[in-house]
Length: 186
Image (cartoon, rainbow, N blue to C red; front, side):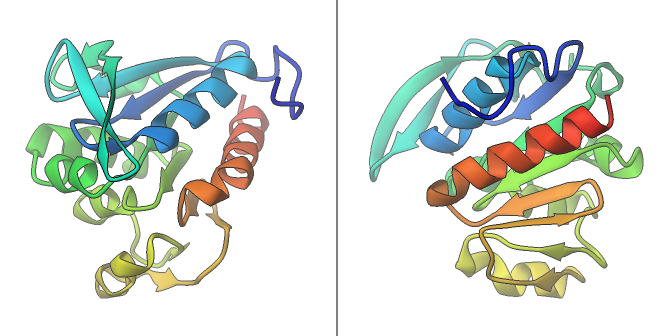
């Protein structure tokens, strides 16, 4: 299916996928599929129970079922964190104290984190980009620099256990790099 890794590469690995309304659909769906294909268990964690709606091609996309509400999720249960983009999604998450604290646990614990497009916005509020080299959607460049990051325009950037990418076109490299990082820390 994905041709990158055999089915058990991430066997025993659990990934928290933090998202809310307005996530970029491809940036949630494609990494989730790739991680699950590699054997990881992926839980969608959000601010509310039920479903959240994606954003696709400048319109509302599909609903995705939420596995856990962030106030009930224990970050200790996860080996890594995935932060999809979309403009609305991270803007809402970075204003929610529970979401920011959840992300901050991964930052403080030095666990693998992958953020794409606008996803790094939430990392700024969780103090996760200072002294890191990152990339993102271009409009976040100044925000990330102001938060102490070195911003570069590259398909995928890995700085320690932090992986960032710019846009949906970067998903193949983003997924491959995150799976490799998670498998190295198994």
